[in-house]
Amino acid sequence: MPVLGSFFGAVLTGGTSRRMGRDKALLRISGRALAVVVADAMVAAGADRVVAMGGDRTALAAEGLTVVDDRYPGEGPLGGILTALDYFQDSTQPVVVLACDLPTADPRNVAAVVEALGDLDGPAVAVPVVDGRRQWMHASWTPATAPLLSAAFMDGERATWRAAEDSVDSGLQILEVDGPSPTGFCDVDQPSDLPPD
Image (cartoon, rainbow, N blue to C red):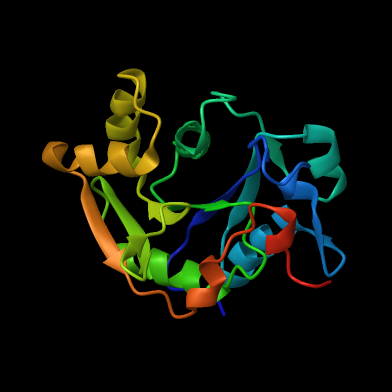
């Protein structure tokens, strides 16, 4: 189900997975690494290219993923988002960035955040809202957001939501999106969260 317009995808695979006790990106769901499940959802939504940001380069590459080294390892997902925007900086296409721990990642949700941006080329992010909470680890970013997020990061901010919300005064548009599949945003943080295989 390709979407209108083109986009790139990035899966955040550089986390420490402390609560899970092992690398979440490499956990197997129905025989596939969790990071691959998420990447496949973006491909199914029409992504021109999907990369994995950070993590175990050798193991992720063995799963068939293209791996990009996180420019800010250990600095949280905002660093991974900035790395993704930098990696695709020569394009005007939006970049969808998803956490690696979404076992039911849904192409319809990916398509929804891409379509919400429409033809916007200024600083904008489309973020799904579930039960009144913005799902920042499932958002679509225009390349023009990079300087604003980078400024917040260099000022010491590490929370993605705060970096984005604080950038509104600098011109960032935050577009809230109702995801077609609310269950597609459910993440896994500890072994008890994993679906039965």
